[in-house]
Each structure stands twice: as structure tokens, then as C-alpha cells.
Image 1 (cartoon, rainbow, N blue to C red):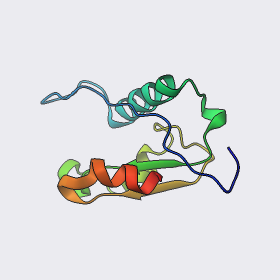
Image 2: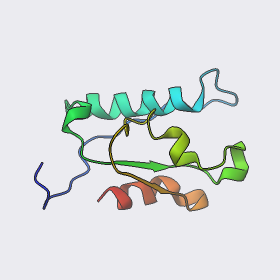
Image 3: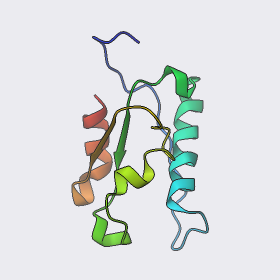
Image 4: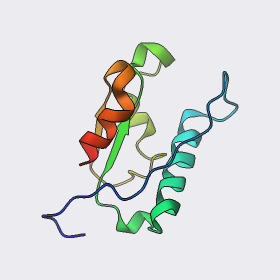
Length: 97
């Protein structure tokens, strides 16, 4: 993609469970992998990563975006983090755009 164009081209989501057996990084990678699969791209095609999570008080991990960025495919890429409580999923798409 050119530097003057931006697009949200894929989406991925993990299953919802009460207590996941996977770590947060593993879940981030699962979602990122599904997003890449959905649009038939690889990490090399991605210029930046958006990491949106619940507020840090919910899971006890400080600076979630830094913790999850490599799991979400953001190793060596710009990462944007956001959370807005119950609207985080919608906000992620807005940030990506």
C-alpha cells in the first residue's frame, strides 16, 4: 500500500470464553492471523498495527499495547493503542482507518 492510502482490509477475532487457556499474546496472534487470512495478506504487507484492549485495570497488565504489540504482528512496526470501555471494538476500526 502506498503511504498516502489507508484501508482496513481484514478482521480476526478469537472465541469468547470465561477463562482462556491461552495467554493474551497468543490470543492477539490468533486474531491477527485470522485477520491476515481473511484478506490473503502477510505481515510484510502491513504498515502499522492497531491494538485496542479493555482498560488495564480489567486484566492487570500495565501498558497493554507494548505487551501485546508483537503478538498482534506489530514487531518493528508503528503501533496505535486505544480503549474506550464498551466501545473498544468500534473504536479499533475507526483508529485503523
